[in-house]
Length: 252
Image 1 (cartoon, one colour):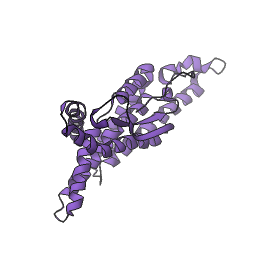
Image 2 (cartoon, one colour; image 1 turned 30 degrees about the vertical axis):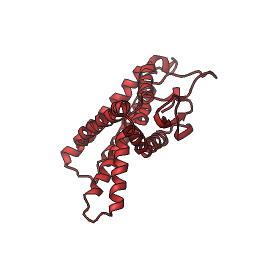
Image 3 (cartoon, one colour; image 1 turned 180 degrees about the horizontal axis):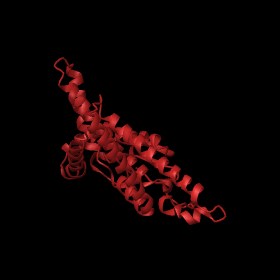
Image 4 (cartoon, one colour; image 1 turned 90 degrees about the vertical axis):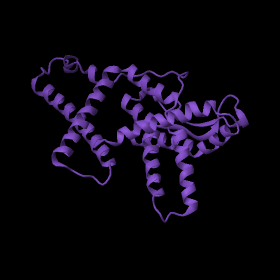
């Protein structure tokens, strides 16, 4: 269980080296060739952000799958993609983490799915080279951008108490799923089921604790007092925001 995390970390390291180091120092015409190969991966990168926004109920303002970036580059190949969010300051740490690292997770599974297809001895020659092309593109584009990492750290720092609360619930859910799967020796058809169970467990513990707190408040707190002030819920609730017109949306 979770053995693929080691491979995912290795995939991330290789993608970072390929996208931030290799593309920065390779000369032309190899640079132009690699940038052209990366186009498919960039589109998948932005679609991964958008998909996780839907999963985490995060509103999207605009999506640019491929556009010219600022600055000059050899052969005019300076391009990228972006996803702009509405009310990005409302992102919790867990939302920012899932959205920011969605391209790594999705690209990782897609890469090894294609890798498995290449082992088929009856694969068509054209499909073989298409799969190779897409796999190379994924490696060149899967790494999180600076905006991805900045948004994650920004969400954590803004409300660190609630962020630690989310981390605690996540670890509790992971430990519960790991114990259940190991104890009962459950075998799933795909590892994605494990992550779905962790997701369900997270919200189970979240609303379970919320219900226990409400029950305790109803049974033991003097109703004549300000029960919310007495219970001091701010440690486990999120901060509120006042937006200004000059606030800029985050770009993933």
